[in-house]
Amino acid sequence: MVMRPNQCPNCVRLERRVAQLEQRLSAATAKIEELEKKLAAAGKNSSNSSKPPSSDIVKPPQKPLEKGRRRKRRRGGQPGHQRNTRPLYPPEQVDTTWVYELPDLGDDWEPLDQFRVVQQVDLVPKLVTVTEHRARLYRNRRTGELIVADLPAEVLRGGLIGPRLTALVGYQKGACHMSYTLIQRFLNDVFGFPVSTGELAKVIGKASAALAGCYDNLQSQLPDQPILNIDETGHPECGRKLWTWGFHSPGENGFTWFHIDPSRSSEVLKDFLGETFGGIIGCDYHSAYRKFLRTTDARLQFCWAHLIRDVKFLTTLPDPSTKHYGEKVLRAIKALFRTWHRRGETSTIGWQRAAERARRQVLDAARRAPRRTEAQNIAARFRDHATYYFLFLTVPGLEPTNNAMERGFRQLVADRKLTQGTRGAVGRRWCERIWTVLATCAQQKRSAFDFIYRSVLAHFYAEPSPMLLPTVD
Image (cartoon, rainbow, N blue to C red):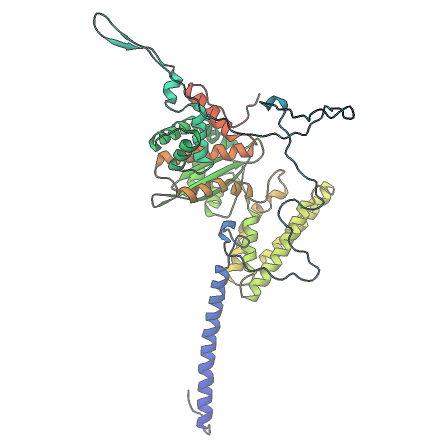
């Protein structure tokens, strides 16, 4: 700092001190903004990011209720609601009936053909049956040669464990996330059936082979689906990170198909959908889907649930302009979905006009973003791919979110956490097939155990495998 003429030394020292303090204040302000951004990022949860709800382990303390607001309702049945009771088993499913009567009460009482019924379900004392198949040996009296009678082929394919117990072991391994050791303990303690873990591994191999036909059939159906929800999640294997891809064809007559792949790129989509796929893909904003869009005739419906969480995150940032932008976009999105939920309450033309008006409001709000990185990222999505956010407004049956496929991942995410992934190609094939069967049977409201049993039975008898897709006459 240069000292001006007639300037006192104290003034010079004061100005120098002010300059130093301003510099420190500027650096401190920048540091505070950086820390506030990190704090906002650390505060991400399932409501403002793609983190799963299970990650919300630490919950904030409950705030005191405002005056006039009611507390959260208790668990279980609510006052004033109709009670739901379990229906009785029909007579054809009742194995034994006991009738209890009072002793003679005199002439004043007459018996009615009405009863108080308590049905009790229990296990039979011996839960497994043991069938011994004997093939007689014959010896040639002259040469001493031995030959043996033929055993049924289905018995040889099944080996020690029959089809229904094979299906149970497969169900325990796939649906119940049980380890071989735990299944071994269950069979020994409950069934009185000691078995080695090596034998159980062979059983899972047979169950996997039994499900191969229906799995491959669903894979062949993928390119012909008009709508597919697709997502991917990590899959660990011996220190490597693979990816589990999920393909969901919506509806009770649809299906859900899984595949584990080392790649997360658009090449996986090309491998299973082909380069001529012309359907609609519901997905998140992952780059693989956008690249697939550029090279095929497919159309995309980007997930609004993912977008809303990202916009909500903007409202937690310290920058006022970014926060205001996020709140403005959220209001426009809420108005859009209020309109969408009223689509059956007005005339078709009236609803279309309202939907178009709500769509324009979202675009106007989203594209006027402040010059901040987070806000500009949201604006870029609508600038580059606005068409593929609003496709659900014009295509009947198309959902605006990818929630259906994400729900399909719950089973395998739990399995991944409990089993720590797979250890090779054999395990991957089993996981792909059993996850596909479990998710599709739940989607079609059918028994997964019954389907596994029929598949195993067909495999043992060398018959055609049952299919997961309903047959079309």
